[in-house]
Structure formats: structure tokens, C-alpha cells
Image 1: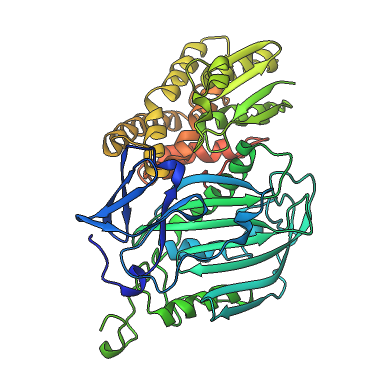
Image 2: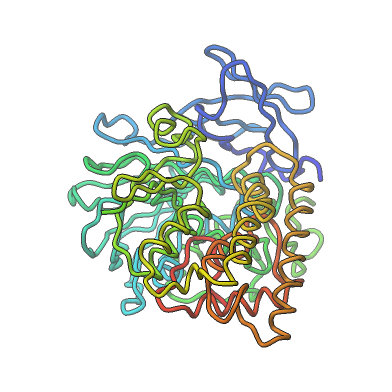
Length: 292
Length: 207
């Protein structure tokens, strides 16, 4: 496989990992959108090259970002990164044999909590997803799901008891997503948990989970272990989902009312004419095809 | 209270968590940031285990490393029935399979770190070693099933079964499915039925 020709995918920012994953002086191989890359960290600068060409680089939010194309916007805003009492937790790259879009969609889903994260993020006695709201914010080109609530036996590393967690979800680009969630110890603020997906190939992704949390008691190891546990519970489900590429063709998968955010996400991907990581469609006339 | 230095995604720590749960032993854990923090290679941890490996288990002044050794200690100390570590003719066979679980089968662990956590190494070579180990195990369990046996050694589960289960069950993470190992699948179902069984992330629930 070689670099995709999908314009919508090329013109985006992608993370290649936390800056701390790239030791100074070392040359680290990576992969993005079907193409091999090399990352070289100099003392202050980071250089990303693919096929002899230097790619643009950003180092916001403790991560290394790059793009093959010309992103329409700069990187998303993350005001919480400027709050001094936040703990920054990098959970490390985890490779998943699934489309990155599947990872994002799974991250947006509340309904699987009782069944995949049993007795942690949900309980089988409380499976109902209450009505929530979704919107496409056209000024920033982001998707938001708000007013989400879910009963959680163990909402976070610091939880001693169950709680009704409030959630907001925010999709800032097709492969980058985050959620805001009630911290057990600071009910008036929001923890931020981000999932930055590096789509290596159409059906192979590297997930970079990153947290900006309010927690005075847990160790870094406990915070990271909690998030890794949750993510690896998802990984086994994601790797067994078929088709492994995200279907955008009507009728291939049937959403329910709980899947409002997924419906909006798929509609948004179609609007962008994104193809990388999606199942090839057979319902379009050749003149309608995004690459035609 | 006994204390386990633990990493949630470690199959070797899971060996210990599983036997602790089956024996109903209360214990505390201390999370070690194995990945991505590599806390097990820092001086404070190396003072506990100079090999820089998980798990480490503290119990009544003892500081033990090596999952297999810890399983022996737990069975020896807490299992009055002697079932988990039989001191009769079965002892040698239990030790033999215990050694295999901590030896040849660990190719799955190596392959899993490369496939899942981006570690450097020769994935194809480790997968081949892992498949050879699973083949040998499946043949043994098929022989046992032919003779009416459900477990690796003798008529009851032993610590050999507990040492073996985690990396067999986690082989998907290493890119190795279970479809070629029918006797292993039968045996995995027996392990899951044990009272007090606990899983871990990555161990499939759909058996």
C-alpha cells in the first residue's frame, strides 16, 4: 500500500505520538495514510520526512502533529491545556487492527459501556442511553454531543463509588476526538480525555490516548492504567468488527436512537467526501464518486 | 496484606491476579507504569527486582519476582488442600508445564508487545515460535482429552493451568487466532468455569 490520494484525508493534521516518544537525536520510523515516514528530533526542532520531502510540523499539546496536505484550519483549540492544575497523562501508542474511523465512532458510543466495560463505565442493570443533543458547529467545523449522562460504577481511577457522569463529546477532525466528563472529585469541572488516532493504513491504526484531568490522589501509573484497561477492552471488539472499514453506504448498518452522534459523524464524513478507512461504496454513480 | 506490583495489561501479572482470585486471597496492588513510562527500569523498581520485570509480590517480608515462582509460593502458602501444587507423582509434570509457560510460551508476550505496543523486534519470528508452542500445547491437551482429562496434569486444575492460561488467551493481541487449536479451546472453557475466575482486558469473553 502507498500514500492515499484521498484529498480529504491528506488535508488534515495527524498526531504521530507524544513528543516524549521521540528521543533527541534518534530517527524513529512511523507510518501515516499508507506511507512510511521518518521522525527526527533535533534539540528543539522536530523533522518529519516522507519520500524525501519535509512535512509541516506542529508540537501543540505535548504531541507531534504533521500533514501531507494543506489543512484548511490550524490545529483545534484546547483551552484546558492552559489550566495549571491539570495532570497531563500520555497513555502511550496502542496499535489496533481496525479503521481509525471505527475507533472514533466507538469512542463516541455510550451504549456499549455496560457490555464492554462492565461494572466500570457501565452496569448491565442500567443500560439505557438517555436522550442527548448533537450539533455540527460550522464556524469551527466540529461535531459536539452534549447533555449526555450515564450511570457509572467506576467512572475514573479515583472513584470510590458509582456516579451519574455527565459527558460531552467533541470531534475536531475525522481522526481526532475528545470527551469531557465529570471528575469524581471536582463535579463542577470537566476532565478531558482525548483519542488522537494515527491512521497508519486503512485498517491499521495507532491510538494515542491523552488525558488532562483533575485528580489529586491517583498516581500517574494508576491514571494511565485505568485508561489503558478501558481502551484494550475496546480493542478486542474493534478488531472483531466487520467490515473493518467504516461503511458509509446507506443500509449497511442500522443505527438506533442512541447512535445520534454516530449518525452525525458519518454524515459529516460523507460531506467531507472522506474515503480513507471507509468501505468502498457501490451505490454511487461514477460521476458522484468523491475522487472522480 | 500481600502486595502485588501490577500492570493492568501484563499477562504475567494476570497469572498472579488469577490465582489470588481463585484462592480468595485479599491483597493490595501498586500500579507500575510499565508502558509508556518504563517505570520497571527505574532505580526504585530495580531495587525491588534487579531484573526490571513484573510482577513482584511482597508477602510477610518476602519479596518475590517471576510469575511462576509467585504461583508456587501462593499454592504452597495458602492452599491447604494441596490441589494447586500437588506433592505426589504429579509434581514433576506440573513443574515441567510451569517452566514451559514461563519459557517457550512467552514468545506470545514478545510478539504481543511488538504487535500492540510498537516495541522493536522480529514479529514474524516470534509468531512462528508462539505457534510452535501452541501446537505442542494443543497436542498435549488433545492427548489428555482422549484419556478423559480436562487439565494439563491430573484430574484437577493446578498452577500449571493458571500459568498457561493468560498468554494463550491473549494471543489475539499478538496476531494469532485460536482457530487452529481445538483442544486448547476446550481447555480454555474449563479454566473460565473455575469459581473465582477473573479475566483481563484483551482476554475474550465470548467462549
